[in-house]
Image (tube, rainbow over all chains, first blue to last red; front, side, top):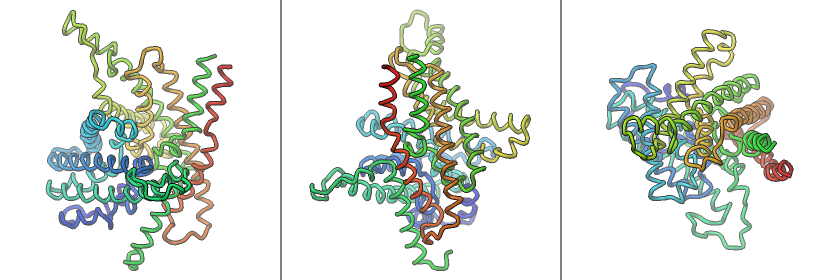
Length: 215
Length: 230
């Protein structure tokens, strides 16, 4: 994972802030292209509401962690790097977790262990490692927002398919007629794997078709 | 007997019914990344089971004695500083920081120990060890233990035996899932898969079918708990 990501993102010259922002959304989409952060992707996409809450949490943690890591990048020691990243991330995740428990108690119950699991989400650690620990705050911020939007779009696409097919609703609003036989398997774990697999195939097919020389 | 029964239920729940990978989706990264060959998958599974047991042991100790509301050690220290105070000390806000620190340092120590004293073992699964720090399965096991230790009435609190059972069988369930997956992927290499689905796509679809098979275990714990309690 790390080698591939390092090879993809040049160290010094690299893409500008704007390019990194765009890159995060489709060309280097964290879920479909880099296969990072799969655990929440599969677990919270049974409905749009938990998926969007998770996106908000990841956005907050990724932006804060990237900015802090970028600010202290001159002080990092190579062998303690990962530990510093995870401790920074863990602090912000604790903030998100307490916030959800205080203001969105039902959602916090529903997301359960997946909020604290943001700490070990490879997406955030990989962005700290690949981008924030080598770039200025402005670039790191643009990168974090772009990657979070890409993450959010991927989650939204999976959650839409699963919620509409599985319970006939979208964001809790009914979109399919009540006669729709609820396709329960889509809301259960197997539906998550299969939906993500098929959507990943679709994205790969689309990207290949637009850039035939890429592979 | 009742205690043994609860251990069996926890073990079955962690390994089969609520399999870490196929039900809770934790540890997906190695599940997709290191499941190309059966021997590597087995090595990864063993390394995870090993680290998960150590991390679960340490996090149970820290949660029970220091972090949970009213934990004995932190209350004792508080009473030394403020004699006569009857405040209940609650350090549970530090839970995540402590767990991640415990996991990262135990991985580091295990790596150093194995490299020094078991070089052949280090050669076979040493490369997986640093990856394990960011493996969600380990933190997930710590969080499950926290749920049953922190802030629950003393009568329902999990003791060390239950915590370790959950961790070890969770690790075995992870090994089972990743080895099954690797076996299937070795066969998949010989199949004609559509170009767009090659790699992660087809792996996820196969994992979905595997998860469907594991759904067959649902409800086994209920019938078994009826059997064990009579």
